[in-house]
Amino acid sequence: MPRLIASAHDYDIQGILDQDHVGQTMFGLPVIGAESDCEQYADCVFHVATYWDGASQDVRQKRYKQIALIERTGLKVVTLIHPTATTTAGSIIGKGTYIDEICHVSNDCVIGPYCSMTTGTVIGHDTTLGFNCQISAQATLSMQTVGHNTSIGAYAKIMHWKNKDTRNRKIHIGSNCKIFSGVAMSKDIPDGHMQITNNRIWRSKEAPQDELC
Image 1 (spheres, helix red, strand yellow):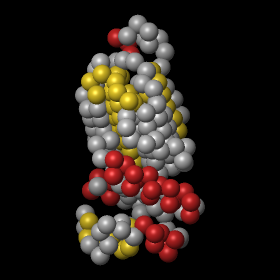
Image 2 (tube, helix red, strand yellow):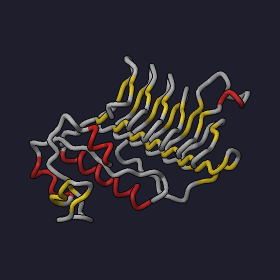
Image 3 (cartoon, helix red, strand yellow):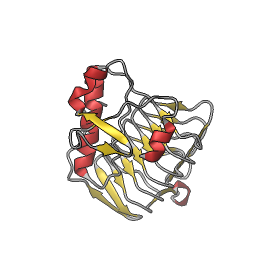
Image 4 (cartoon, helix red, strand yellow):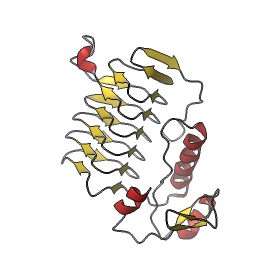
């Protein structure tokens, strides 16, 4: 969160809206109301800062509800890019996305709305991320398509060149998927599945979130 705040250096931050912490101070900023109060600040711009790393279903649902509220009310959202992050000309960065410190987005990438990338993530060339994807620290993707509402854990790597079936094409990770930390991704993952280790893929029991996609 402090790095996200640093990324908003072009804005005068008024405070945080979070119904679970009204009246408190978080990261040096006042919690000035609940999410439902957002239309009182219609002349402001917003960023959904709740970060879901795939580990907590409650946080995943909370973030999705916050995005749904912003979309329903038509409030303006901003994309935040940390000063140490780099993006290549020609790549498309969707609204409401956050790119953390020392991340890199290479050429010919499409980053969907409301995505988050944490420290040191590398998005290699010709990669597409869907709506509300969460990419954790130092994960590396390249020549890959990722569906909506999918999380990729820290230090996960794209390893499609090790699989003869995917060596010369993009790997596809479906929507509502979880790739666990440290996994070497070398095969397609269908919608609603989890890749727990390099060779173990299970169906997720969590309900998909597709209403906004």
